[in-house]
Amino acid sequence: MKHARIAWSGAIQQAVEEHGRLHITQGPHKGHRVAFDDVVWLPPLSPVPQARTVIALGLNYADHAKELAFKAPEEPLAFMKGEASLIGHKAFTKRPEQVAYMHYECELAVVIGRTARRVKKADAYGFVGGYSVANDYAIRDYLENWYRPNLRVKNRDTCTPIGPWLVNAADIPNPMALKLQTTVNGQVTQSGSTADMIFDVPTLIEYFSSFMTLNPGDLILTGTPDGIVNVNPGDVVVTEIEGIGALTNTLVKA
Image (tube, rainbow, N blue to C red; front, side):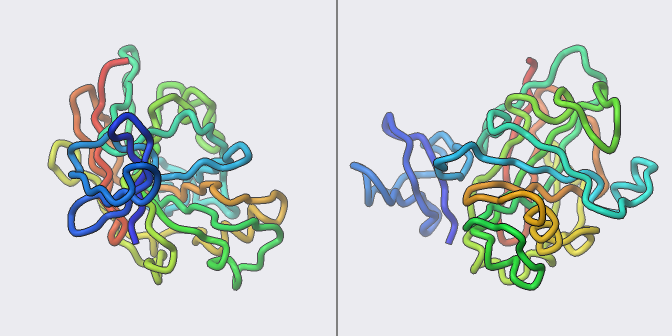
């Protein structure tokens, strides 16, 4: 099932996809069906009682590491992001006027479904609540260390679109065999498969939960394949993952 979080009729609503429309599932408008174009799409993540942890992976595809002239890492290379960077489907990402190179990154987003601590790889999928599509923009001008991006590179407001859907984990039987694709203004610029991750989803959950607690609602952004290109104000970027959805985002001037 595909879940969405939207703003409609003056309120934030939870909805599911049903026959090409949004079926509102909670609140005073429960049961209403609305068109995709009649709502504001929000990150498809329910509120959580604690601060949400957002973990992002660097160089988790060998072809992307090669694209950047780096050796593939021997253990996961991770950095943290704040929730304020997250925006929804069809939202706008600000590109600072003075920067020379800003690019998208199509990524499988893993949403933790239950508290995970010292999880074994063989049990890891049991701790996944669902999957979404993330576009983890990076501004290369500010990069001081390719392995540990600083905050101005990766943790910027509006620079992590996610959505449109949160798909139940049970509906994605093999998240490690999904096609990824990015288009810029309708032209395919990036394509790959989650099968090419260096560290797969179970490995990442085992690794992170070995030294930190993962709580329900936490996110793991699993990295991107090669095919990054510079994008500019006015460009429409669509990051798509097979079986999960197509996330549309437009660049604007900051």
